[in-house]
Image (cartoon, rainbow, N blue to C red):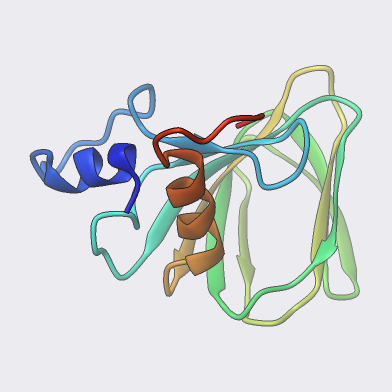
Length: 139
């Protein structure tokens, strides 16, 4: 386990989360994912995914179910065959293995608060690789 992830695992497991101190990973270039829970043994993972102006997250799917809320900005979401423009305060649900994608529509980042169940192991793997001592290159 990487040093940063180990440190986060050992820290006080309080009930309040600090997004500024939470680890960040890039699942696709230019997009930032802040991992709020799921790296300390929780059964769910909560993340803030920020998609910057001009970027689309490609169509993809995963075995985890997710629920989310648009935290900030405005974007176009495609979930299965349904497409909708959404903005702050809108909610979404994506069952496991349903293809989905998003596009930022404004000049401000499109940010979605997402809860995955179960935890996304691919995100944990990126966190561990990113925090491995002596690792060089982009993070």
